[in-house]
Structure formats: C-alpha cells, structure tokens
Image 1: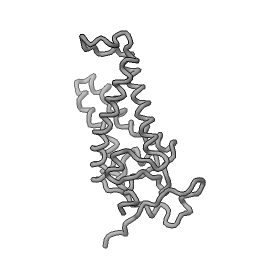
Image 2: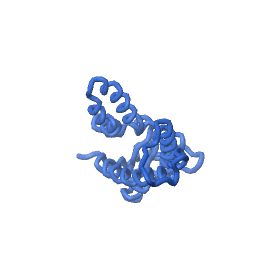
Image 3: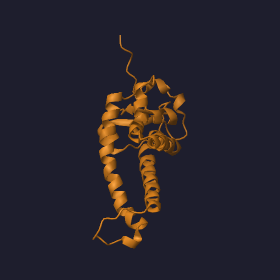
Image 4: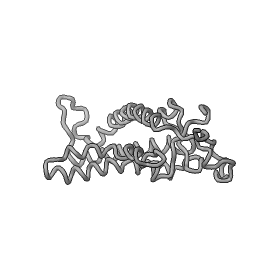
Length: 195
C-alpha cells in the first residue's frame, strides 16, 4: 500500500502561522527527484541567458579602457575578472532571491509546475531564499578548494565532480532533498494547481 499523497498548501495570510493550518507540514506534495532534476536542466539553460546578458552589460564597467575596441579579444586581468565574478554573484543572488521569495517562482519552476515552500508549507521569505542561494555555492566552493589542493599533485581535474555535490546529496538524503534545501529549510513541491 503506497503512502497517501501529500499536497502543497498555499502560503498563509500575512502574519498568520503556517503551523496553525490544518495539515501543516504533512500537507506538502513534494516533487519527485526526477522532476526536480529535469527542472534543474531547464533552469540551467535559462540561467545561461541571464549570465550572458548580465556579462554583456557589466563587461564595459570592469574593462573601461578597452570598451569599444573590437579589433582584438582580450581576457580581462585578474582583478577585473574577480570584480566581474562578484558582480555576477550579486546579480544571480538578486535574481534568485526575488524569484524564490514570497510565493514567486522562476520560469523553469512555472513550466514544470513546481513551487518552493518552507518545511512547514509557508511561503519562503527573502532571508530563507538568500540562505538557499548561498547554500547552492557549497558544491562549487568544495570543488575550488579540492582543486587548489589536488592540482598540486596533478589531479586537479578530479575536483570537478564536487560542483554537483549539492545535487548528489539527494541520493543519500532520507527525503531526497538537495543539500541547499536541507540547509535553508525549504522544499520543492508540486504546484497546488497540479495536484
């Protein structure tokens, strides 16, 4: 006999507690791992467009001395690349915090009819969305650290799989949650309109 299907409950009214709602956390209709991974692939394609557009707009700001000179392709110096990385980090943080908080969703989440909710079924706050975004960088951070150590011995390429650490976590998690969802106390659920 299969367990009963859990449904996503809409966020409570402003100031109300999601725990006081009938069903509470037990009413979540958690999305399957396969759906979340498929939405992740689609999200990655859309994110490439966001990164390209932001880089196109920001590159002249970090390389003003070469702006408008199209005769040669020059890789910016290290300080300019670091500045561009932090600008992109901030742009992506703003994008995801906006899309994940207060019941909003990214285009991939809308397409796959997924929503992001707190563990208790309530809407994600901007603070929780920021925590989730920062936790998404655990895997890439581990990969950079491992690369720094392993490259000393000629094995730097073996650190690349750690980029996916957050997503591989779902295969060992008892609820099949990604690491960043576990850290931030969020869940990806099926949209209430699909249940």
